[in-house]
Image (cartoon, rainbow, N blue to C red):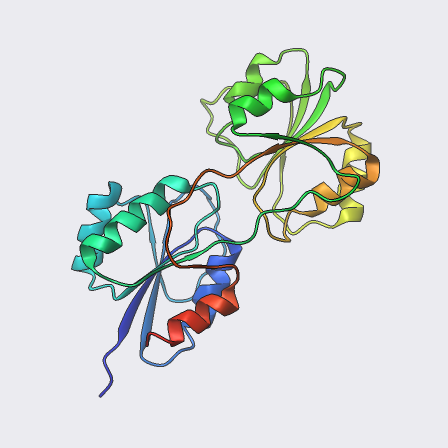
Length: 249
């Protein structure tokens, strides 16, 4: 009788959900997905799901050992750097295979008007002086730096609403989940007379339409670059992650 391989996916992305669905179809495999709990209504996932943090790398080590995890795949958001560093440290202590599924960053192309910055705080300072109406697409947790820009108006899009006690910049909150189309993004930008966009370089197809729309409308994009992630084995897509896993089963 074959022994079951227990796989932990650090999730919270569409890639993680797609990976869990494919891995759950493999023989003699039990897949578990861990979510940070920031999204109030996450997509349905194959296999079992846990929600919440681990308590740093030491807590993750304990979890890996207690749950007898055999393989860890980090498929978190490109900007969720802390959990990636914790995972890279924990797998050494737990002595198990570790893979990072990191979708490629968007690349600047002809006619893109990007202002590349290193942080959300820097993005708030880099908004062009002639732009007063801004499309803010960085999620709901890092809005604070923009509250200082009292002369600006912001269209803020996120999947879930910010916490009730969080101060918001002047503007309008739009709750929506991708994927989005270029046509709809162009219409949205025109409807709200947007003059610039602030975005994280998340990569992937689900939200790239806003970048294409900005190019079409010749709008500047303040693009927040990704934080540094740990070294280690990594792949760019779900199919490659499944292939990597099959080699180890």
